[in-house]
Image (cartoon, rainbow, N blue to C red; front, side, top):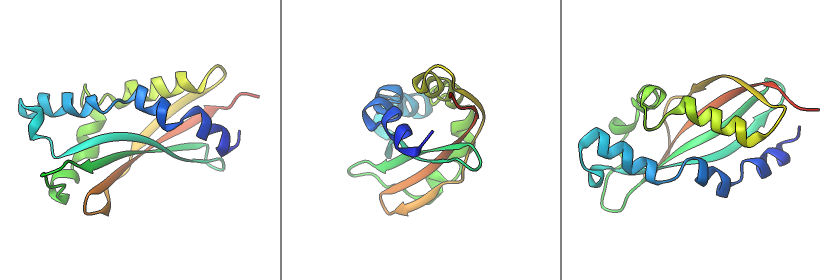
Length: 136
C-alpha cells in the first residue's frame, strides 16, 4: 500500500473524528479538575508510512493555547503519561485507527517517541504502529 492511500484513509477530518480536540479538555479536567488549566490542545495527524519497516507514524500535536505556556518541562514526561492514561487511551486509539484502515489490516505493537519541540507553540509526540498485515 502506498503512502498516498494512507493519506486518504487517515485524513485530518477522519482523525479529528477519532481523536477530537475535546479529548484534551477531558484530559485536563481529569488531571487538574479544571479544563481551563490545560496549556495546550492535542490533535492527531498522519505523518507517514515507512514501508520498509511496516510502521505507520502519526503525530500527537500539542499546540499552545492562547495565554498559556507550552513549556518543555510540561511536555517531556507526556509520552509515559499518554501511554497509560485512560482518557488519552492510546491502546484504544490504535484499535480505532486499525478499524478505520479497514478489512484486512492488522496492527501490532505501538510506541510513543519522546516529545519533540517543533516551535515555541508546537511540540509533537510520534505514535508509531507496526502494521502486521497489509491487505492485497
